[in-house]
Length: 211
Image (cartoon, rainbow, N blue to C red; front, side):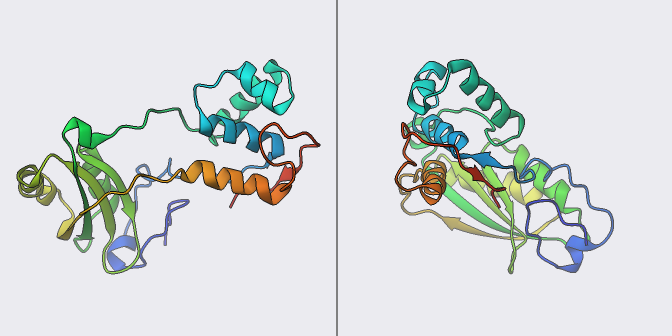
């Protein structure tokens, strides 16, 4: 069985027969890397405000600006920091309907081709390979129910490799939690609860690969 790195694949016959193209999954998760306390402090500060200046971060972690810039560049090279982006309220732009679709694939179909076609749809926000009765979990946004019907009838259901779908409408979307920030801060707290907050002094402790 060929398993894309970082992806849990349902051990069904139609997912394991023949050659599997891994290109659609290759960027999901890289190998774990080691970071120290200062790296985590820098990450927490960036997660609080990605537009914070290097000089401001350096003052918080008691390092020189060039040293902090090099650490940030290393975290980017390692793939720990994958980018900087704006958070969009799509409801205010007319895409207020959040939808999840459970997808079951056709026996013998190439799953990676199905994933690639789904991801090509502008309205599709995320595609996950899952275990259980379904093969894929798709998250998408639509303007309204008419738009959703058009997406399903004219686009999603015409994608090769899709045998069956189950559509779940989100009745109420909660504000997203600051997952990255909270988890990064919890790692700092595990190292040294007394000096884990940004601005604390002390020797940078090494954290093993984050797995």
